[in-house]
Amino acid sequence: MKIMQILSEATNIIAEGEVLQLMNMHDASLDQVTYLRVIRSKTAKLFEATARIAAVLADSDAKTEEACAQFGQALGTAFQIRDDALDYDGQQNELGEKFRR
Image (cartoon, rainbow, N blue to C red; front, side):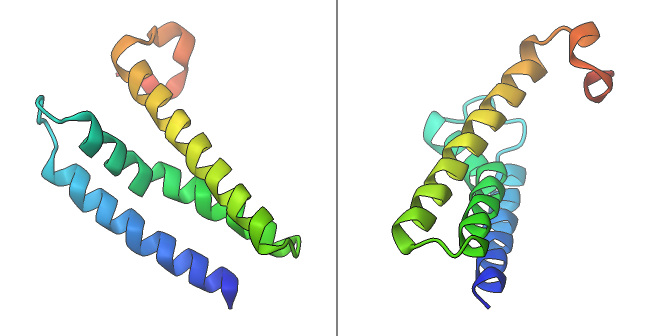
C-alpha cells in the first residue's frame, strides 16, 4: 500500500506541474522560482518517487527513505535543468535523435 500511496501522490503532483507548465508556456518573463516549481513538480517528482520506492522495497528505515527521496528530487532537478539547457545550447550532432528538429 505504501508504494501505491507514493505513486498516487506523485501522479497528482506531476499532473499539477503539467498544468503549471502549460499556464506558463512561452512566457519569457518566467522567474526562477516558478521554473523550479514546474520541474520539481514533474521530472524531479518522478525521480523522487522512484528513489523512495527503492528504499521502501529495500525495507529501509524512515530516515533512509527520506534521504533517498531527497536525492531523487535533487537528481531529477539537475537532470531537467541540464536537459533544458541543451534545448537552447546543445549541438544537434552531439545530442542524438531526441534533439533532431
